[in-house]
Length: 375
Ligand SMILES: [Zn+2]
Image (tube, rainbow, N blue to C red; front, top):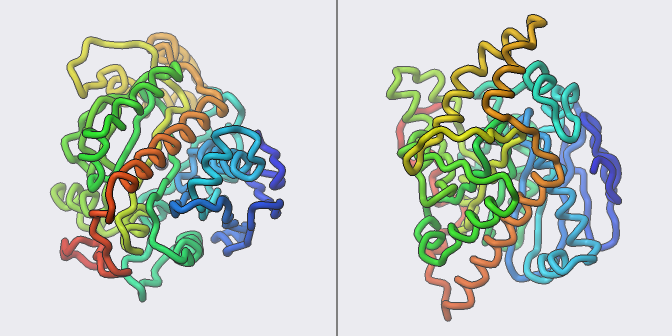
């Protein structure tokens, strides 16, 4: 899955070129001078933006984005042909190639739990590429990755109908599908949540059915489906803990940025685990006690592994039946998530003579939500 017709996509080294049916452009450079690419493909009526790879230790999204582009361009599968005729995509397959390079030590397919524990590196808040998009037209205080991704996405002739940010979780009890709160009601009422739960179950991964009660913007919509995180909620979370310094590090996400470009895009974030926890503990709806316990123990297990003692990690893996997820299974679920959501948006559009959603002019949305604290 590392080499595609677009070129080479091995850890730390992304080199893509155009193939017929897909425009590939160099959109800028990362802080460490790696090239960022933008792709335009498909010729359908829905305008879709897609970003992947924001978080350094989540290597599968960028591979899934490339695989999707391959499917669209080759038109070899029914799904690829359908995507090509339904949507026009602007894709930034890797928004953080530096992060990818810093995580090259453990990028095997499937990943190894111990290599991951020892080698996963993630940028701290403030350096986080997902939460570093411009908050206004004149906002320049950005990582170069965000700056070039933002300008590439802003070149769309029309506001987006859908935005997708591909992410992953390290460990989880299954797949977790995130949908922006503006579309939560639609997702519940039209059966989209149920269809998402079904693909999560059918994949064999099951669902990560967690209720976080609005913390950082996450509110459970239905089984395995939650709202997307929000930077204003991130800031509130840290302000409530008397940490204004940390709060100020959360700037608009790609979801908020694309929403600010106008229209009312359905925003999606995929959270598919790289390692799935098979063990189940007694739980009520919206509780993931096995995950909570693994998460509580991970820091000390990681510390031991880094010090050369693998025993706690091996015990944790065995006790909670932690299994790696192949990149193919992981990508497939990320792409199917998109397919079902594109279908849902097409259905909403078809059922309305005039789209009922509010079309906001560009930049009228304030992604900071008027919460007051400046940079
Ligand atoms: Zn992430």
